[in-house]
Length: 296
Image 1 (tube, rainbow, N blue to C red):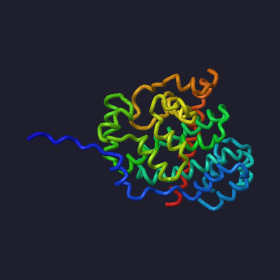
Image 2: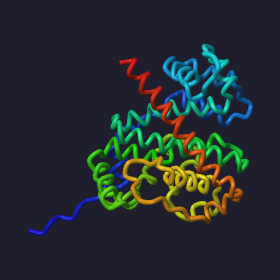
Image 3: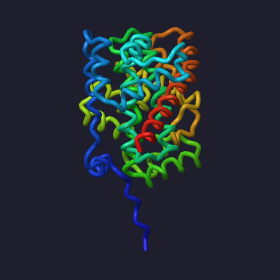
Image 4: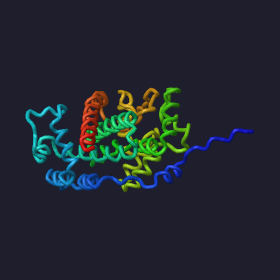
């Protein structure tokens, strides 16, 4: 009897399996609104954070962690915002809020999740650095794009764990990229799944488009955000900040860097920045893990 052909999972299959996509936390929505408001202030951010006791505690733990190395313990949220700066606090709030969503979807598959978070956070940090060098109008949106660029992998990990594991195994055995290995079980890719999730969350079209095309060479031709994401993803992977299943050597089309129009010294500075972005990613993961454990 002839063997039946294997049926690959489509984007529509993913959408059906994900009965109810977890909503973004209310705090995340508030912060995103603040990002778009040029008149928002540090006090506005503080007013948002204090609505969430767990988030407030995590922010204060981060502020007083060895990573920031402040000379004395900070006990006041407004003081913390003043010391770290408005932009950094907003990014911490986004990171802490989104990590809850990621953990919910991933069903707490700890090892794969930790790698996913490290890679996403590093890319986000690099994205903001590149956006600032480019003078983009909204560097915080670039940060958010970096955090969410691989969110499709989280959906695969959480809702199709066996198939996700098969993709990771195939990539490791063949020493190929996750993108190439996805065809083992999926007829869609994590970029398409992630773009669907971002659109479902009503995120800006620029963010959705960058997520959708972040593995497409040439996607940066008319879009600086996509060029920044392509480079930041490459920089993170080339320096070892990779998700499970990213096993091939990092390839980079130098036309993307040319499109950014930044000097060569910025290229090397961004590469060196991976280590510091990885350090804060690890601190955030430790703080959120410790807080969750205390709550149990």
